[in-house]
Length: 345
Ligand SMILES: Nc1nc2c(ncn2[C@@H]2O[C@H](COP(=O)(O)OP(=O)(O)OP(=O)(O)O)[C@@H](O)[C@H]2O)c(=O)[nH]1
Ligand SMILES: [Mg+2]
Ligand SMILES: [Zn+2]
Image (cartoon, rainbow, N blue to C red):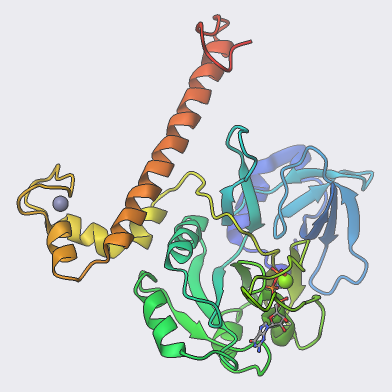
């Protein structure tokens, strides 16, 4: 039986059983770090000699539970995830690929710094991914020890926070860390995401009580970070529970969304329910509750525009996926690809 203290649970156990033979061979371990084709794997919560094996060809992410082959050379199986924070990989021009930033997490902390101007549009996108992850989203606003107008920043971000908890903290003074630590009770896994320089690693170091992760100064003129953390890492908390520190990322591109958009924009969807016509386009229609709220100053038109962009982005992605599936089906059926099909060879 894999280690419950490392995050094993019934869901993972069921997914493991489903692998059957030879998948059920060997005891699963948890990926704590990935470096260019190598996975570091913990076999139990206090493993001081983790395995290091190849993961070429295996679709692994930090936090995954995996089964290693008998020769202990490579990842043989990845056990079905119970949650994962996924964005669209940012390879310009390429076909859409998923980029799994962390797996098997209980709480997603979206980290923003109180020292930078509030970025509502970024938080909205992050919330969509966080809701879609299957984990519980929360927000941490860092650098409270040096921020000027905390109230104003908090108010702006809360306006787009879809009701999720917002914590104000400092990784330097340790203020505001208790609610974050409390989220890990019961051996749960917390993952931190956000732009470079917002203070994720500083927060993680403060929570675990030692300088495990390297940190570095942001650029003075624009508060941008220097991409200090280069590898995602799973780290134990002293009293149980796990933290995942991740490299700062710039692009928050949507991956296929479940109900993430609806949940991140629940206030706007609630308004839409009140439109007079069920097929209201929220444009010029009479009785449109969305336009009424915008006129009344109750809904920021920028937030509504943001929702429209996200819905369009998701629709384009779904369209592309559907097209790829059609092509794959046709190939399976042994028929020729259609003329002019960019994917047909
Ligand atoms: N005053 C103050 N400085 C902080 C706080 N948190 C982080 N910093 C500083 O901000 C800078 C960036 O912090 P990091 O923890 O490296 O940021 P990060 O989010 O891990 O950045 P990447 O690894 O590049 O994604 C460092 O100089 C930290 O000392 C805080 O709460 N208060
Ligand atoms: Mg970092
Ligand atoms: Zn409407």
